[in-house]
Length: 166
Image (tube, rainbow, N blue to C red; front, top):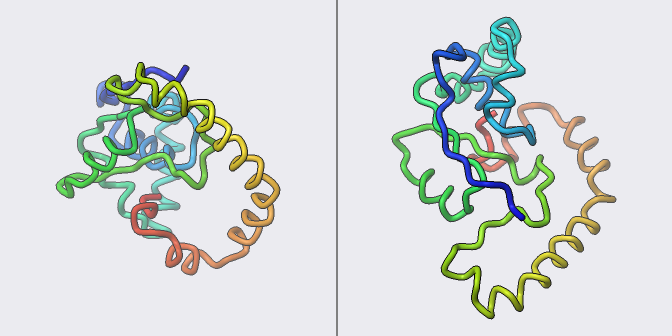
């Protein structure tokens, strides 16, 4: 069963703005929820992260998260795309390249969850996810080592703009 959908604020009463900004920056590469990431951070660690990534590497998008922070978890890709199409805000999402997704980690709208099409195709969709995961797994270490060896400027230039938030 997929995890429950969560929509919540990271409270500025519980975390300073710099820590919240870092929590949102780290979510791109972390499998943990926004609130779990924020709970693990300290003010000193957040300042160090900002010094390295915002000041040192120029990732200004991290600082953009120091305004209003709404976390949306376990919602559909369609919902994410609709929300992110509003360019009057800044967004960071879990990376589809750097995260390992659960085989049942997809959203099925209620309108389709009880129909015959859903019931007949669900096993095939899960098997397809399993096969894709098995096929890609042997390549991952080599791809990671090549990416680590590439200069930062080249890595940034080859990543799609939508995945450049951190």
